Length: 312
Image 1: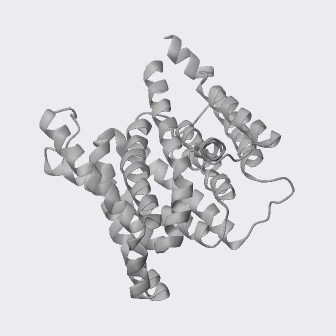
Image 2: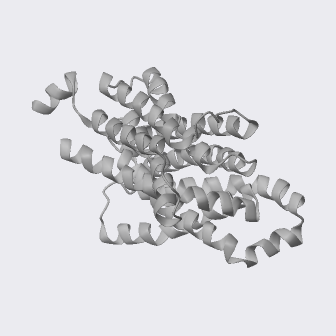
């Protein structure tokens, strides 16, 4: 049982890695084609990427959770719709925060504040966690601050308020997945959520992005690889792969621990900049990484009733 929990945590860590790199893609892609257009197109790409995967899984019989009855389909459609609406709201608010000028580092920190919100919301739906997880959450939050926010430069602007709202909505997204994932096939539900997100994101894209840019300029923005490289990365990797891994990894894992693992996207976004772009890591950023790693390890240690259950 413990081994399976660690495996799921590692799946979520891989999810965080993909999301961490995606912050740059989101910023560049949203500026190129408009925030809503970017989200809509990448969501549709994510859904279409998963269709052959679903057909392959069905053909080989790799999943015993694929819907067989009307009731099964009802649960999958309901779960996919709820996840899709939450994802649509959260990702579009996040995209607007970046579009209105919040830096990727601050965006990473403020979005990852869901690690503090999830256990509070989880308490109301009887998802309790040990003291070690709560201490780990606080240590991770402090680590994220050192990692993402330069010294003496924290100020809350409109774009940052949007990102805090995004963190609140992502908390609901995590809890919705926690509710539906044991009852559904993760890949199919992920595909449905992207279709829902893509359709609902297309509405403000038509009403806002196209009029503000002008139809000709908006159409011409898709003729450049500067637009398509971020869109394809966000669609295939961030949506198609990472969000599916989130649903699979979260199945049976405490949502607070899951949110803690996924908050590592901020660490990976900084490390990716250091390795790929040559960005220099300051002492406070290194301290932030150390605190984050320590928080992850602490949250995984069984204590109290968890320890007794593991020994049994």
